[in-house]
Length: 367
Image 1 (cartoon, rainbow, N blue to C red):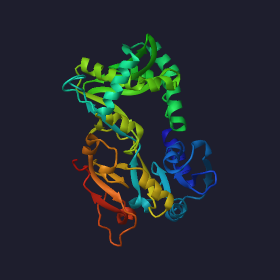
Image 2 (image 1 turned 180 degrees about the vertical axis):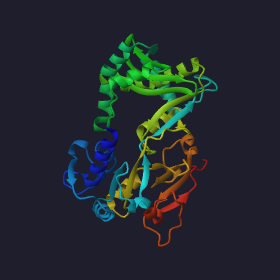
Image 3 (image 1 turned 180 degrees about the horizontal axis):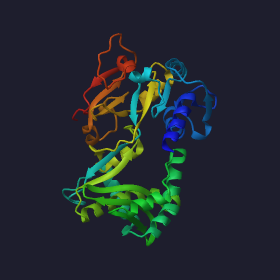
Image 4 (image 1 turned 90 degrees about the horizontal axis):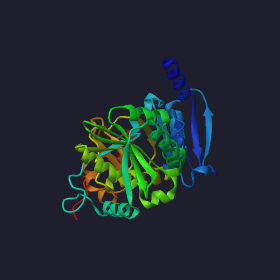
């Protein structure tokens, strides 16, 4: 069955694409080989609420490079999922990973002298104290089933809407049954209000999925997510593990989850999982694409595995932490106008984008 499914996916990718636009159809993008991914790029590329965006399925003969460039001229962005792009345009595509993993060293000291926390983390710790949170660890399947139904599903739907990837109950139970699987439950005044499914392994303590009761914003604002992190740090210390694996984030320095994890001292993992990439055909001269490139600092993996940023801002102008910037090997700044002769010729920069970038030192200057 798998070869048949792959063949059907290939035919779908070659003979159709989606166009997502604003309600007035003045702005939009095209996407090949993907359906769910339209929500991610709709949120990044188009203004307004997701409910106001429109999607159309276009069926056609096998697409050519010329077809894709026509779409690029119209929209400024064409997204390719999997291997749906024509081979002729491969040198012009920017590969953007689906996600990047973050990690941090297990703190040696949680409070007082030697504690590693910055101002944001200290604020979260104070909120946890005020909320009078506590925790325990459960390993029974009934607890995970309840967590999935009452906490995980409503939380992910509420926070991520159409972009949410919702793991099924059997997936969470599979994690629990694996060696080291456990559910860290968070309580407030004796009530179970949140938790995180975790796994302890020889190479670290891994946080898998988080949720809170009914997805209720009251618990979120009270600090229940911060509490799941704080108690996970304590659990990693108790287990004698030296590394905490915080899971994946979207590959943009402005991503809220990336920024939240970095406030606790997280940095990009040197052993990040490879979950695949989107391939973007971009036209920086298009006004909508220009807005997108200026708004988001996109992180890509170079052929050698190093992380590279393409941004409309310098490192100092972003909110990236010093630990995050240490994981960036090279930084490319978008130009307002292309150069007649590119100054950047590196293979990691797509051919059509080389006239549009200037290379910068990826470290923010010291104050």
